[in-house]
Length: 296
Image (cartoon, rainbow, N blue to C red; front, side, top):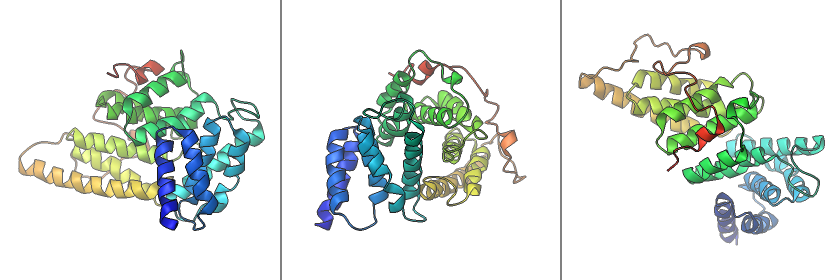
């Protein structure tokens, strides 16, 4: 039965990623009702809470979210993320919410897009769907008008992910730089900064700017374990990326190719000298339409 329940959770996870929240609720409810081990409970609880939220069942969502922090295991980055999201939801519930009534959604449309829908599409690489959701979440608004802080940082980060997925590297760089620019205004979404630096480091690697890539990736490693959501998988990804960059850098030198960003100084740079080979900091496309233009 344990194996069956784990499969039930995985089925619910697939429904959740597909934004089929009715089916996800059924699978998650069955799993949590019978599975006694601590594995998956916190993250599943978060997903169930958001599935209820997306169906407008605010009371049911709050009831589940109240249990999630107690299910979170120490030193498990996915559990830490689930607990943080649950506490944020409950805090908004106590404060009266931002977009709904007691019988409807609690979160604003933009929050539901950035906390649930777009992350799901990004996870399965449904880039066009993610782009459309980002555009529809802010009809007629300019992304540059978002107040600096958590919501704006999430928006620019996910826009960067989408643009990179659609092979629009210049636009991805601009979006990631915007997200990075929010670093001093972020209160909750701290994970955005190390993940953004990783994305930028990988883009530098792809562009053949190996020393710059190494500097960016090393900054992520300096963030340390336990300091942000999803730290363990990201730090493993960074370690692999650094190995690949070093190998590419050695091959480039053996071939006599020049890396314009190469330096033997060992200086990883500081936050205030963040630069990507002279790329314009703001570029164009401040409007939310920039998140969906040329998607085909």
